[in-house]
Amino acid sequence: MNAPLKIDFVSDVACPWCAIGLASLEEALRRLEGQVQAELHFQPFELNPNMPPGGQDVTEHLAQKYGSTPEQQAAAREGIRQRGEALGFAFRREGRGRVWNTFNAHRLLHWAGLEGPVQQLALKKALLEAYHGRGEVMQDPEVLARAAEAAGLDGARAREILAGDEYASEVSQQESYYLDHGIHAVPSVIINGRHLIQGGQPPEAFEQALRQIAAGTPA
Image (cartoon, rainbow, N blue to C red; front, side, top):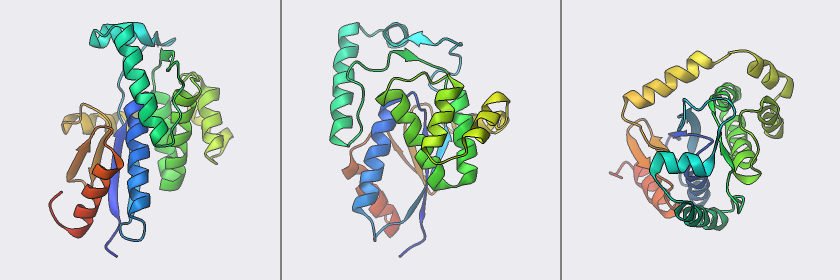
């Protein structure tokens, strides 16, 4: 078997399509088990880096940002819910209620990545489930610490990180790196530093691309 593919998954916890993209990618990797090896790394991207404490009502936020009506948003949420359900990810039917700043979630994810790819994946999934699955408050340090504990990480260490500014500069540098390299939408999946797949693609798209890249043919 060839060397493992390095997959950088650039995303934000606040992004529902990132939850769909990750579930699709994991399904593709399951289908390719025994044929393609991959190591997954989560890289930070903030959809709303200037979101103040307290967040913003999601309907108001989406109307301001995209000009969408409540009816359009409800239809989009239902489409996202159905896509998630087909992939085994449960979105709350009523959707997330508020949009939060996610910088501290990215600081914890950076720490988890230093612990190892398995731990980082577990924390990413725990955070996505806390926000999109249960509608929890992403700016609440206790919510973030409980997600770390659910991922098998040290809750006391997570709380210590959240109480200070550890990994803030590292996260900011990584965010700037991807913005400077043209990543302005998520999820963006970068394979071996060269191949870019964007959006919440279906498993078949990821499977085909991964198979081709692993075989050394153009994706």
